[in-house]
Every structure is written in structure tokens, then in C-alpha cells.
Image (cartoon, rainbow, N blue to C red; front, side, top):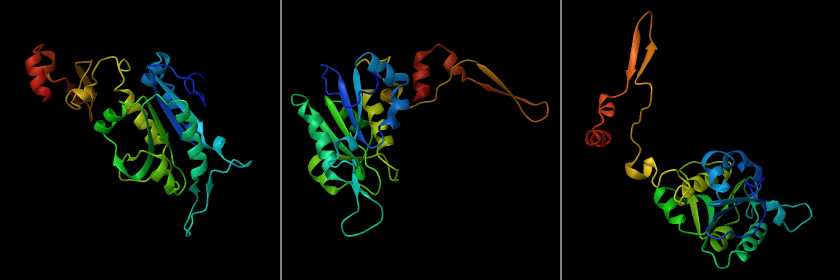
Length: 229
């Protein structure tokens, strides 16, 4: 498929590239193959490449995890395959502005301000953790920063990676139909569309009319802006 370029390192000038490091690359297939992200890739505005960390393992069994030093439950993702994967990508991106991100509950909470900042980079390398975590040397020596999407724990970094790709892509020129999205103008406000009157049957024979606010039908743009706040 052209929508996910598995371990392809060709460079297209002007295209923003997202490199997703994971042990489950197929988890991204559906989300990035639909809607805005699909069109953005078809227009060659962005490129989304998923890499299986196992392909960079150093043993014949493609082992990417091991038990934690000092004891404890679960397994920890090893530093070696992640180091090799990031280095391989960076070797093809020497002249580009690149940022490497590790998803972690200890990281900065992701928001629109961070998304806009990350959109200034040519390439983003997104490391998706799994199991009980990632060897701390990845955070200390490989990642440029750690990001969290909230005060809760997920099974892995794949969902956060999709959120970052989606949010950052919206700041790439040409990705959205309009220069500014609804949220970027003044925050999300109430919106309505046809029909003007929506009749809902209540108990017995009673009916309710869920109407569109009259101000939105007035054609008075100043009043509408005031109503939207």
C-alpha cells in the first residue's frame, strides 16, 4: 500500500514525514488510510511510515524485550533495536530538521501548542512503547522529548502516535480544506445544520421540536459572531 511506506527512506522535498516505531505496525492501517490523512498522503503533503521494531533486533528470534533489572512485573522494551531504527532513519535525514519523541506518562501533556511547535519540524520519529515500559536509556539518550496524552495508562504508544500525527498534520499547509480549522479560530462552538426543525415524538402523542437558534438563520453575521462568543 502507498499509504504506509514500510521502511522506505526515499525523501520527497517539502513533504512532512512521520516515522512510527512500533511492534504492531498494522495497528495504524485503518486510521491513516481514511479521510483527511489519506488525502494528505495522496497529495504528497505528508508521509506516514510504520517500522516494526523487531526488524532491528540483534538476534535471530527478533527479541525486542527482556526482564527488568532489579526485578518487577512484565517485560521492558530493549534499547538496542530502537537505537538502530532511529539511527537508520536519521542517516537518511541528515539535512532535515528532525525531532524524536517517546510516549510516556511522565512526558509533557500534549496540546495544540505542542502540535504547532512540532509542525515546524521536517520529520518526526515517534517511539511507541509497550509492556511495562521502555529502557530508560531511550528517554535519556535517544528521544529529544517525552510526551503524554493524559493522566492515564494505555497498553502502548500507538494511540498517542495517531493523535500526534493527526493534530500535527492539521498545521501542514494544504492538509485542511480551509486555512484554519474551527478549533483554531476561537475554540469549539455550537454548530447546527439542516433541517431547521427536527420533530421528535415524545411520550404518547406529544411531539417536540428541536429548532435551530433563530440568530443563525438571521443572516446577520455580527449577531452570529456575538452568539458564538
